[in-house]
Image 1: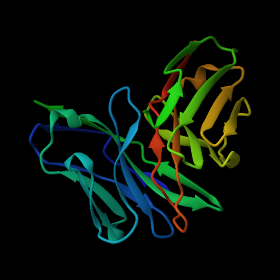
Image 2: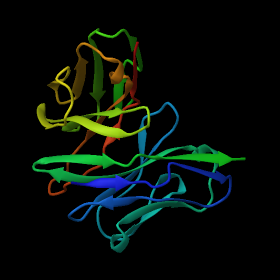
Image 3: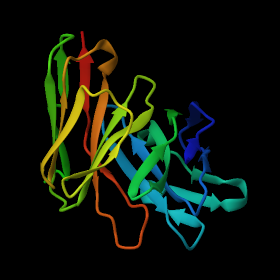
Image 4: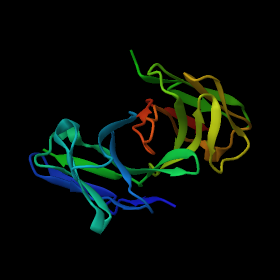
Length: 115
Length: 116
């Protein structure tokens, strides 16, 4: 069974500082990996995804993530955080159960940005 | 031109009532999903429909029944609401490309259900 672990429940950074959110996954085959962001009171928006190819993936809003198979990780990074980045971030792994495809989400990391 | 829409956005009701949440997507996708997000923000899939056919049915009480009248709509009906049903329910949709075993899912804004 697939699973995702986001070890950091809450992270606080100052505006302009760099950011790294951790994500570790467990999946028996080649994983399909996603990062979603949820702003307060909103639905989930896709930031970026990894299916295959280059292990460094660029997303929207200046985010990037790196797939490291040896570490079973897919960490999200941003070089300079903006106040508007304050939100909940979810890592997810996509896979299949029989003929059914589904996403399994981590428990999320709440990002607070200090002025 | 909202891609995935849900109604209502907020739902406050008494224990024991029956309620429905509606979801519509205008993306032309074949697959739709319902997720439940609990008070700790943990997201878990409940159901998935592909071309109106149920393909994922996770362990949820029988009181929850999805209905897909056509591939653009997936409604969630909940009977005999309980306090523990209070959560945010998200609808999502996707288009599964041929030969790919995962795809991007597009989420609605969520329905915040509070059972009193």
